[in-house]
Length: 313
Ligand code: UDP
Ligand code: MG
Image (cartoon, rainbow, N blue to C red):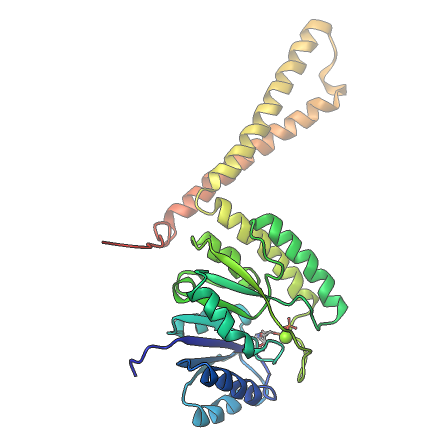
């Protein structure tokens, strides 16, 4: 029972009944060949097919399986969150259930965490077997995410990733944030983020669960996640800063326009700059107020003083 677990493989699954037996058998084969003590954590994200029945059946055959099943479909991020909570292994691997990711990558991913010292290693599906309508938006996503986060990864959204256990216990994945786990990890203070080119396969059974609508949500999430990581603790810095700039611009422009009226007699009201400046003053004050409100909300939030502590003596 208390034997050390080398790897926890967390598998979020939503209507993947056909691929589960093959997936589990494959993970088992790889783990045994490398003498790894392992557990498989299957999170059934409210499947409407027979997936949960298959998990229960597989549990009989492979006692290393632990599983939970949601009452309804909450999304991949929720599934990963719960899987991370349950994971006990020294290294935690996440893997899609659809056999698009290869369990053969597990030993090398684990080695990179333990020997090369990475906190997180993300797979990179360099040669990708997905429809083109998915590959191009994904390239765009990755480019934006790279620029916004400063993390040099090619494939943020790869389902196959490996983590040091501490990482998954320190981050909170929600919404459609599973795409940006490396950003969450970086924000939590884990700087050693690596990448490994991984093999990718065409979907053998079932169909993809991510369409365009999810991509739009994912994009908005990218904006929130990078906003939160820059200004989450001090919203006044952004709102107050912008507000001050706008207010000062408006104030001095109006002062100048009024002074000029007295000197040269130009009427105020036929100058576009006058109206722009008034708008700038109003917006500046509004932004400032948004900053104050942000600070007030922050002060009342339960985790305003939650910090990740690394070491103690
Ligand atoms: N998934 C999930 N909940 C969802 C959607 C997907 O747990 O609401 C799982 C799905 O079963 C699979 C993984 O997330 O194991 C990746 O999904 P999918 O293969 O559909 O995405 P794609 O590879 O097409 O990006
Ligand atoms: Mg897939």
